[in-house]
Image (cartoon, rainbow, N blue to C red; front, side):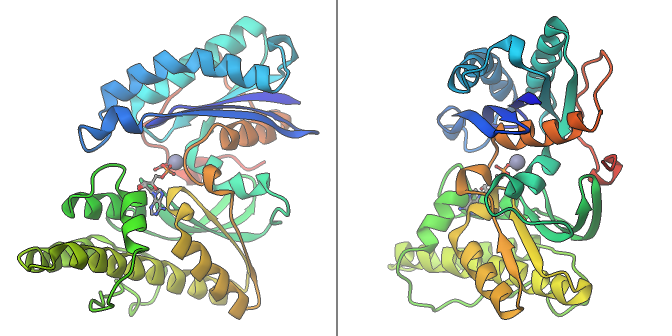
Length: 340
Ligand code: KG4
Ligand code: ZN
């Protein structure tokens, strides 16, 4: 089965072609970073308009690169939520309309399920059951994954998502948009190690997270430091101390989940999964636990069409598809997904 996948939930237009036998045939991406950077964050209306501008040419490009004609497609998958509703509608209406014109099934895919299963695109791929740390701009959770659509959420963020905490902290430090990767880069520069930030909620039992207190702690520290003559180098120190605290906290909770469930396979997905320090620390932690960690390649940690084409193919193959309506949901709890 050959499936075209469309991602347009936020600030990236992604399109891919995935084949159940041959694997990923092509994937193309247009990032809106430049468009939004002068506003310091994503402007939803501009995002929607930009998806309109780029989606059709990207679909053609993805088909060309996959050496696939429209007639060779067996289905179309698009991100149906969660995300910015206007941005989602662009992918949903295009995907649904194209599928109707071609007389093939269409399926709305859950964006976070796309992230969650993205490590299955790699070789070697993890096998079920596994634990998944999902860390994106909108979500932070640890889930136990028994199969496709069989997700038990063991813990999640009570306030800011990890990526959101990165982005807001970066903004407070005057680092601009997109904050996460910029802050991470600054954190990688030399530092004196003068700051040590608290690891939120690690003393409490359970697997939930909270990052908003850490964000405030960072802001207060920066207020003090910014008055000093060495403010610039302090900023890098603060970025590093913040990143250390987030990464440590995620790692401690993942270790706890491994010990609680006895599952020794960990999958890391979502934009913050691109963070090098997180990747290496989780790798070391899982080795000590006698387990293994799996990641998507860096470009498939952040939003992309490949993960949507992939999940779409798995579910369409199982016979699932949507009726002749255009579906998009800004909010969509992952527990509502049907098992395959
Ligand atoms: O998964 P994603 O592309 O979009 C959502 O579904 O939210 O995740 C984007 C998030 C943003 O908050 C971004 O700042 C963060 O992932 N991010 C990073 C890094 N790269 C992206 N955070 C920390 N370190 C990075 N290297
Ligand atoms: Zn995402």
